[in-house]
Length: 128
Figure 1 (tube, helix red, strand yellow):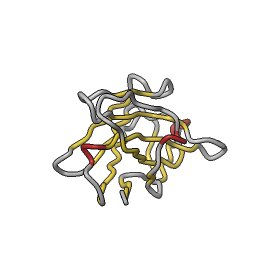
Figure 2: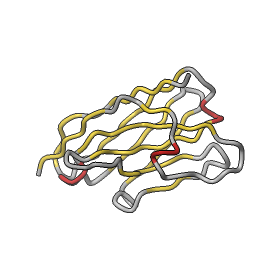
Figure 3: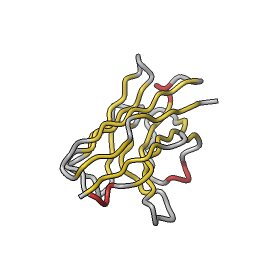
């Protein structure tokens, strides 16, 4: 079973940059699509941030982070990274790495319910 472990969270200030890393084990990551989600302190649902497709390197970004966010994967190192720049207090939340197995050529999904494997999350707090 795929296991995901996030790292890199902490306390940051507005305007800082954040780099999170997700270490993956228990599977061949080149056969999975990966995503990053976050849950705000008062949020009921996990918000989609970014996703990386196993096919042709496609990526998608959520509206709230588009232009400030970059997702990258390293199949050799079994890691998925998220870079978020120009942080705002509203970026505060628990950040999760997630994955689902995908056939080649299938489109990326941004729906959290479609992701079958999740990390434990890492807390990110942005002060103004």
